[in-house]
Image (cartoon, rainbow, N blue to C red; front, top):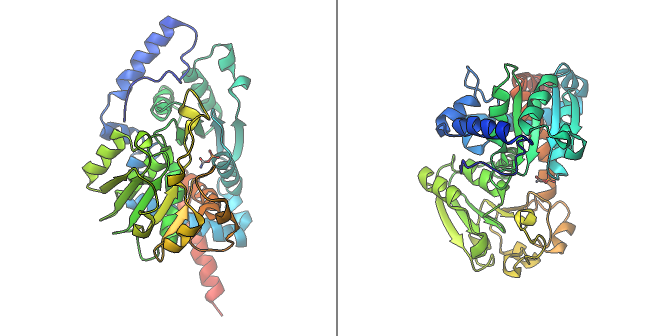
Length: 380
Ligand code: CP
């Protein structure tokens, strides 16, 4: 992770105070990746903050996926039970950048668990407009809530948040709902759930193509890091040269021994090689100064006829929002088990419910309740 300070964080109007805070934050950032992970983990080794995919292991992902499956079923059969689990807990959904799915899936997941929730979706309604540094805003938020979910344009907001929260002795869980171009760990979890549900035989040995904007696609970065946890994975980074994978993620894959193949001349020849998932993304032009000027290269579009070239079992997905990178006809294939992008949207709600259940230690209760329901149904 590039640990430089980020101008997208608001440090307040006082230069003296800002310089002081920046120096303190820089000290925090200089910790090793192991120390950062430790700062995100409680004394029992459970994650208390969800900030980066590199903090996940297979045991954690298995717990979240099994809890998500159980929550989905329990909600259908015993919704009141699910709603009783976190009635005493509260969350602030603080979205300093646009979102449809992540915001709504978090909010709906929290409602399923009975949590009290509030939103900030427009910074113009915040006292930052009166010069309050974001550090103080976060500390204020932590006074009223047990957890904070945050989306932010800064690449380092995740670290900034756990640093700011560490200034208080309140125990507040922080969840990164997408920070800059680097990480979107809960999207990584939901995509992992989708991959896992589509490949009951397991993910070891599978090949995956990540297509579009591999340079700034935070969902791509989190997904790739998660896949390194499996054996013999091959990752194709399919993007024009100027949108190819960033050096930092490439180095991470190398260190984990995951095979990476960069393809810059189009998607066509890659489709028949993939037996895991073809993961499409749009150009993330919110990072461009001349937003909207970059055209998506048609060689990287998933065309309708490519469905016929897909290997058995392979799936097509996209974190959404999408633009022209998937041919329009694909949306009209109802119930095609290969096309997972819309089903993944719903998976996001259940994996986010599972993430909150995990953070507040009720995940085992949800799985236990599901087992009891199953047993009762099987008893004549
Ligand atoms: N996938 C995703 O992050 O979508 P939103 O930007 O709509 O939240």
